[in-house]
Amino acid sequence: MWTTVIFDLDGTLTASGEGIRNAVAYALEKMGLPVPPEDELNQFIGPPLTVSFQNRYGLTPEESIPGVNLFREYYNARGIYENEPYAGVDQCLKDLKDAGFKMGIASSKPHSMVVKVLKYFGLYEYFSFIQGAPEDESEHGEKAQILAQVLADLNDEVPKDQIVYVGDRIYDIEGAHANDLKVIGVSYGYGGFDELARCGADRIVSSPMMLSRLLIEQLNDSASDSKTEDNTSESGITEFQSYQEYHQIQPIRQDKLPLKVWRVFYPMILYLVISNIFAVGVSLVFSVIGAILGASPDVVNDFLTHGMVAMQGLAGLITLPFLILFIKRDEARRSMGYYPRGVFKEIAIKPQWIIAGIIMILIGNKGIGNVIEYTGITQVDQAFQEASEYLFNGPIVLQILVICFFGPVVEELIFRGLIYRRLKDYMGMWPAIWLTPLIFAVYHMNLSQGIFAFLLGMCMTAMYEKTGKLWVSILLHITNNFVAVVFTEILDSIPILSLPVTDFIFAGIYLVMLAVLLVSLRKDNKNQKNPALN
Figure 1 (cartoon, rainbow, N blue to C red):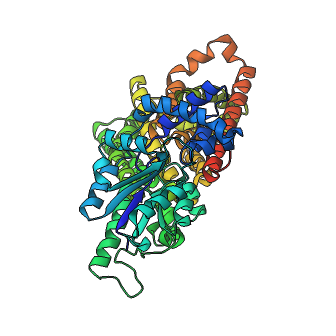
Figure 2 (tube, rainbow, N blue to C red; figure 1 turned 135 degrees about the horizontal axis):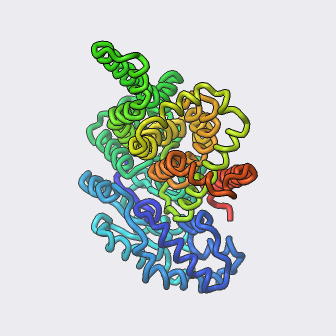
Figure 3 (cartoon, one colour; figure 1 turned 180 degrees about the horizontal axis):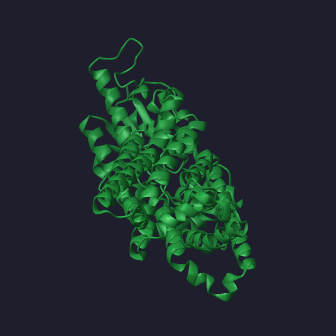
């Protein structure tokens, strides 16, 4: 039974990445050292600064001290405010305090900085003891040493088997285990699920809410003596089980293959069913009305053809509340640790990512679309021609409203917000990145649009993974459809843009940019799996 909880600070209670990265970059610039990309700057979050400077730049302990001082110069003035508690942390700490837990802090950040951060965010009152790194950095302030000092100060007041440490990086796991302490890893921090699993976290949770739930349940189970003979609580959580055992009891591990397939595909099926029911129903109604009024079948068909865009918009409007409900339910389950592989880490979005994504969509729309047309596929693709006739025969205002705005929102909620995330829940990032655009392509039910949807859908899916924000893929989808509906003829009227060679160049540039995007995702994923590499 755990009655005392010791917390790490950065990446566990607060999302301090922006301030730390900026402070490290400031120190490196002042020292005349190269500043690495943001994903590599993340490696400075967690370990002592002196160790990071030594490992990354080959500095001696003495040579790293000026870097530490420059870091503090920036961090004390600005970096501390480029920081915020993770959502749910305050409530988690309040619930734990109300439940009777004794709580403390053990951080590699200097003691004065720890206190300053906790007081600034109103978290100081929750903790009975606080242990930070030495102020002068004369010692490394390694997590094992800091935890050893905490245990010495407790002076055997609390048995070790009643103490648990909570952290987000490999250094936290190793430091706790070096002191014979159990440790709970938080996958929402800077280490991620894979790092925590690989280094042997005893438990892994994906949100502050899940953390408080786990701790309070094991405390209540012990207090009420309601455990079963095999030491398992009613919730299925065993007191000292390994992280592998813990995740095996989660619902994701109990899903059978048919249920997984159904969970992935039913949002798309729901939309298609509603769309078809709506289209058939409206067609029948207007056919009956036409027959009563004596209108010819051609007139009725022409009316329905021009109204197909409106019917698609109405079907999406009906489906939209369900999609939002499904996404909210998924996020609630992920926050409780049910689907840890699908959780996005905290990411600071760079504007250049968004700009690059828009550029990719613009040149991809022009290049890929026209290259497909040059192959002659569109001329023999009857399904494509019928789809184009339905979609582009309505009033232009309605086309812009439904095809350019409302349609992309609905489709992104389905394909990125639900299908991609659910595939990632079960299979991880890479299979989901490839399968989602493939499903998106098949959904269009014709070869011409399918090829186009796969290639540009890959960009939308990768950018969603890169940023962790669904609005980014929605923006890219809107950009693509808006260009297709409004600007295609305008662009083709520009002489240099109407040349076939230009289209092939654009298609090539798009594919190169897509490859660069995928490589950057691979690098991000590799850094998450190998955080100790410098």
